Amino acid sequence: EHLENEDGHDYHCEEIRWNAVNTIRYPLLCSLAGVLAGLFGVGGGIIKGPLMLELGVEPQVAGATASTMILFTSASAAVSFQVFGLLKGDYGAFCFILGFSCTLLGQVAIQRWMQETKRPSVTVLSIGLVLAISTVLLVMEMIGHMARTEDLQKLVLPTSLCNIND
Image (cartoon, helix red, strand yellow):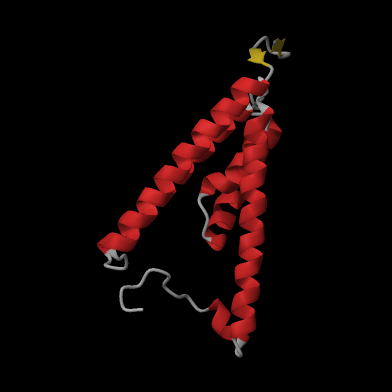
């Protein structure tokens, strides 16, 4: 379905409509999403996926774009850890194989589910499920750290997850 703007531009119904307000609002929201992704240590796609859905981007496009962002964020983080000598080779290889295998399994399962149901909402549900699981795990990790730490100020100090010396 196509909609026509007052200036005569032909918009697809799922296309973002850029106007004076959206030209300021969307980049600000994306910048905030990037800051939050950096603060919480997650790929920007995890936060931008739902943001793109809210903006009216088609679920398949939002999912693919979010996955691409996560791919580049994860790859650059892995390269940085390797360059600075903070990554154990066997640990990195195991995590790569596990991530690749789980992604392949998830992709096949979601594709089959979408073909059977003929509904794009499966993509939205999968993004929501990943966010929900991530949120629960983040809270569990935080509670675990708080329970093991006597001095709560130590929780805000930077630490290394993959340090070879640990």
